[in-house]
Amino acid sequence: MHHHGGALLSSGITDSSLVHHLQNAKAHGVTREEIAAIITHAAMYVGWPKGWAAFRLAKDVWGEE
Image 1 (cartoon, rainbow, N blue to C red):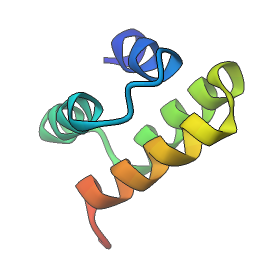
Image 2 (image 1 turned 120 degrees about the horizontal axis):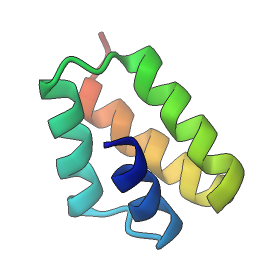
Image 3 (image 1 turned 90 degrees about the vertical axis):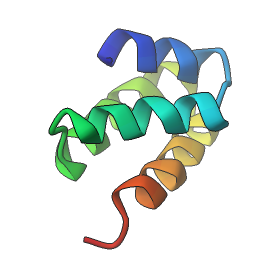
Image 4 (image 1 turned 90 degrees about the horizontal axis):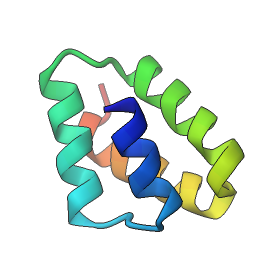
C-alpha cells in the first residue's frame, strides 16, 4: 500500500482509484493516524496540493471518527 499509494499520489491520481486504495488500507486496519503519516510523507515528494487532495479523500473514507 505504501509504495503503491505514493505512486498514485505522485502521478496525480486523486480520484476513485485512490479512494479504493484508501478504503483497502482502512479495511486492513490502517488507522487515521497511520494514513495521515503516509500521506504527509508522500506529500513531501509529490507536493502539497496533491497531498491535501489525498487528505480530503482520506477524511471521507475514515469519516469523523
